[in-house]
Image (cartoon, rainbow, N blue to C red):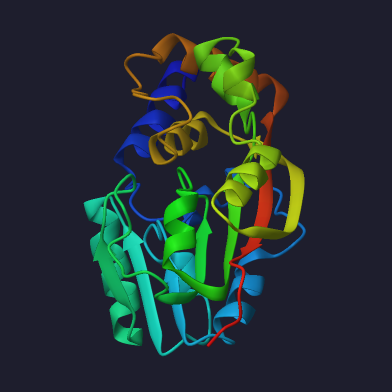
Length: 258
């Protein structure tokens, strides 16, 4: 197989692969990412087991929420992308959870003080005032989020050097400040920088099609030259290394639970 043919086959396979939901099993053997030390899914599950009403915001296909062995009596998830809404409903409805189709930038369609716990893994954006509004007094927000300049070795390969205001976006300290402005008390804030490896160009293409905010508007046709360049680099070096950033934030609404 020629180098050009190998490149085209890997890209074609990645383009044909479905990208709905947050199942990353397609990357097995082709890409790896170090996991944060705090174990978000396990910690989320422990919190779900202690409350009576919980909301998971921007649930994706419901995979992370669905990993919890026990759901509260009232468990609700929101999602804005229609393919993910259907996927989350199929996964979560049989366990008694309600899935609500709700745009990410719209107010949460719930009454004030409706939930003891609000969770979210990798939200596109956190609307802190809405989180504070739907939490009951004494309720908690628990979230793992993408940090600043995450995987920017990959981003800048395609987009070139990014300005400092872009590199500093999603900063954990800014999240703390916004939570406090919304009236929440931040009780835990942790950060991690994690090694990523992409072992073939198909993994890069699939990643950029799935995590669409990394290179907005990404298409194979538009970035064909940069993809070929990266393919050659991976073939020579064995892998392309980048680093993701994550932070864990937990915040409490003042007051006592009823």
